[in-house]
Image (cartoon, rainbow, N blue to C red; front, side):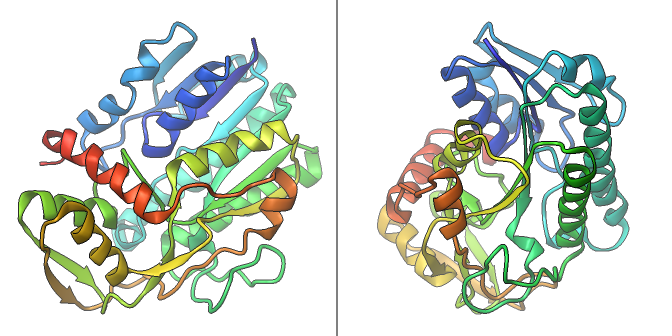
Length: 318
């Protein structure tokens, strides 16, 4: 039985990735320091299934302070998802935290991965935020990366660290640029969760911008499958877009949520926030070729599952 380390394991993506790895007969070492970006009870709920599994071990520690070498030396795979998320909160005094969690933590992980020399593959989570303000489909090879938020800057810096460690020390790193991941357990400050919670609690909802901004929305199961497909396809020294295959406007999403929930939303429109891009759309042709990535979940199906999840767990979010 091989061992995978998952950082940020209590998060939205990390917890579901860990569950899938356990189902596929991996031992999983999960690391999370329960930052206060959103309530701890949500992260604890995310881990309920993992904690029932005898092949799961969990460390509640800051990666900056852990002796990583013994953990890495007994592991074959590393999924690095730990990060400080959020575009809007990355400005001003919070930037130091983003530098620590997104850059310094990544550099420390890479240094210890180099020293351990044990990993068959290292998969690192990045973000579509590295692209910044672009039109059309965003392509890993031909599209210039120019983030427009401090968060995006730190994620691009982490990507660049991965590239130089891969090139200089031959670390088998694949970086996945996730495009707006949604589904059950989505972080509470993200748009879909705000929309769904407003519908289910009959609350007013603020949309920043005119609602015509578009995003490439990617369902959580497709993201998890893409991450594990890197192992199955033995990838290395790659950067891959992981998108849902269809860009939609925020207003279209609102209409879908109204249709699914059968509850009318009370929407207020406010000024666009600094760092928010107008459009994201992933060119996934490279991921299709390299890891046989084909997103399976249509937006209405995925949203229906998310609405049902929030309805059944509303106490976590209110």
